[in-house]
Length: 131
Ligand SMILES: [Fe+2]
Image 1 (cartoon, rainbow, N blue to C red):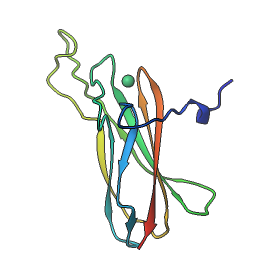
Image 2 (image 1 turned 90 degrees about the vertical axis):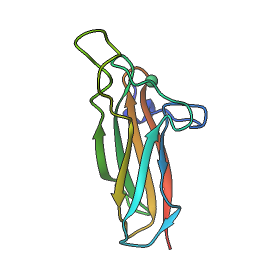
Image 3 (image 1 turned 45 degrees about the vertical axis):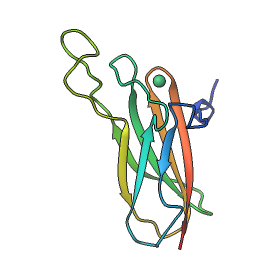
């Protein structure tokens, strides 16, 4: 029986279209808001169709030296071009990318997870220091 942590996949985001890449500064000022962008398909586009899409991204922060991580955001993508008529030609799509505004008072690691309805769970992490 698999443990949930064993089901997360990762890879080189420049070649693997499922990796939830985190773009954030390498270091920030304590208690000052900064942007964290999480995007999938940054280099190689991922499909966005009813039958194959990214359903959600979650973002966490793990402060350095602490036991637990904190959830920062939970982002669901509901529009993938579905239509009552011919599929894949609907009028609305949501892109699988988010920008969160975040502030921290300790250095740590941002962790992103995501789920493709065909290819499962994916993860990525990026450390952020304090100036
Ligand atoms: Fe996929």
